[in-house]
Amino acid sequence: MSMNDFYNEAIWEKAWKDQSEIMLKKMQKAGVDFSHSFDPKAKTFNEQSFSEEGRKRSRRIINWLEGQGVGFENTSVLDIGAASGVFTVPFAERGARVTALESSPPLVELLEENIAKFADDQVSIVHEPFEHIDVQDKGWGEAFDLVFVSMCPVILDWESVEKVLYCARKYCYISMPVTHNEHSLLQEIWPLITGQSFKKKPLEMGYLLHLLYLKGYSYESLVTREMKTKEVTHEAALQEVMTMLGHYGLSVDEKAVRTVAGYLEQAYPSGRVAVQEGGRFGKVLIRLQDQSMYSKED
Image 1 (cartoon, rainbow, N blue to C red):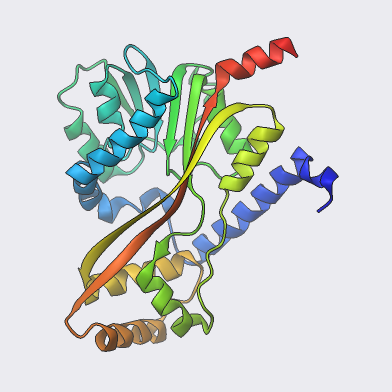
Image 2 (spheres, rainbow, N blue to C red):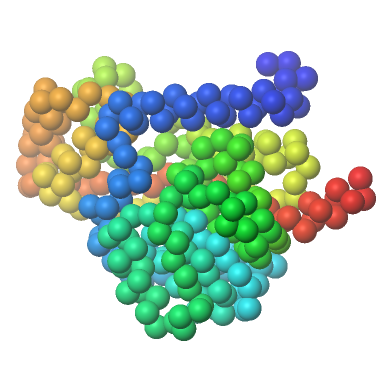
């Protein structure tokens, strides 16, 4: 890549779009349906989100936003991929009016339970995927003080970023993984299935940050590494690893199942598997007001 290419927006936009299309094809081939992938895990996810540890994580992110000058009292927030309300609830508790966007039926059900304590006009739920929404038709142009997208697979390319930015008046927050998920058991299993060691690859966060830089946006970003340890049964470990192999576009046939099951029996004779998981995560807060001021001065 030449220096001219490094500063060429069109090249970076195309590279991001091409990479996303390859990833989506792999997912489709493996039978992964993003719109319903969380359905079976909704109850567990909700419990984790509102556990003491889950609330601490939410507070940490909200504290970071407040430290950058984002206020919530009497502001409007669009929470894209709201799940069961892990951020919708604390935003509303801080006095924000929240539009929570969630398409998974079991998560919507849990979200409705979690927001029942608020006034009817404080939290509204939009039960459809963001990618199906015509934001112009909805009148969402600069309609929200903060648009919040936390670890939600709607950010696929620059076009999807523009759609999110279109809805924001003051701020837009996006968080994404920086590398593939770190999972100790997957790293152990990987060579048995592929014959190669597991290599962590950088993900799309780099495209997002570089394009924001090239296009003159004002933003703050932060990358952290977060890990946790859990203990699961052989059966749960087997199911989890096979799902993850599918996400990578690898075969999850009977032979692969036997290989993984045999390894678990041999390596973890107690029947319990200690798994370390997490990774590097990036968050970025884009300041739209600074952007408009910059444009006027320019």
